[in-house]
Length: 326
Image 1 (tube, rainbow, N blue to C red):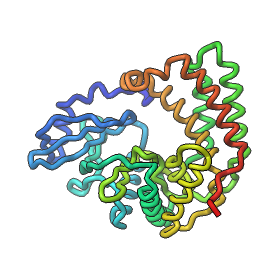
Image 2 (cartoon, rainbow, N blue to C red):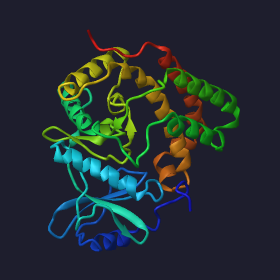
Image 3 (cartoon, rainbow, N blue to C red):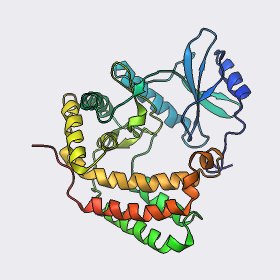
Image 4 (tube, rainbow, N blue to C red):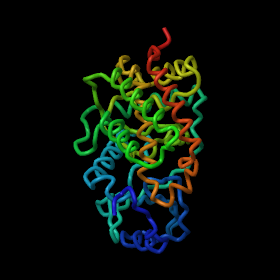
């Protein structure tokens, strides 16, 4: 079965319980599903009342080498006293197998929602992103892929063209604007980029707030430009995003140099994410969890709205890039 059509129906509570028992962890509570669709993630307490999170990986998405490389990077950050949630080492292993499933155990870390409109919290996040990248830039991932036009734009675009999701009455305009978006992104995508190891999916939902920020879920870690871990924290009108960027980079540059030329990548990266996200949902649609979680995806109104979204993103790409406040 391909990963596109794979579902987790065989992953019953009993199987989860026995998988954990197999590595010496006895769950005493029920398994609370957490917000994850690519993998399956559950919170529980053990017989000593310790709270854990267990993640069962979607088969064939990552190789074992790629998963372990993420684990190693996360531990490297934790060893540098950066607040990340790193896997629990059980008898020298962080990746375990049971009945065909690969899984990892994490400590359960509570926290409040990171407030993206809180300037103090934003600067604090910027400082820790600077510390993360100071560690990350010492080398690149060997097994994990790069953020590339091929993986994030060309392949997803081709998948959408071969899918059945786009309603017939808008296919001409949808694909015309998709191709125009691809061409516009190509125009602004530099030939040579400086790549470092990244969190990869550093949006506000992957930052908890305790005494300060705690970074979670490095499942999408890969090589790419540093701005990838920054631009998803920006929101609002242009002047608001400029202010937010200035606050983040003020903290960031206390610990790590930033190349201002990367700011011209913000809108191309946003465009890549748009296309990649649509194709990701289409690829996963046969997993029963996806129609339940994203019922709007198969509605013609969603696809009609994406035609307008393409046009707006093309216009954003043609605007001058964000720049720091003088």
